[in-house]
Length: 110
Image (cartoon, rainbow, N blue to C red; front, side, top):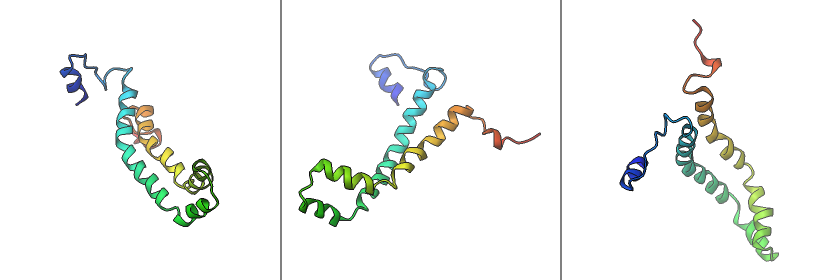
């Protein structure tokens, strides 16, 4: 689809998967396109899990927005953050490292 847009604009159409310089870029673009909505849902679930009364207590204490974010929102979302950083990076890393071949531990023995 991106090549069609480039063709409509009379720009050169790169070979995304055969050009050595663009392989990693194309994998990363697909990775971001594929995982961003899922990670946003995870982040939203983490934000919705924070009880409202904690924010109300911070409001009563006249905490500023930065203080609320730094002392309530970030720490309460801590259980969600490691997964949203590590989980979507496994497949593209495997694809780049093994170039479509199975990992060494999974190769069939002759």
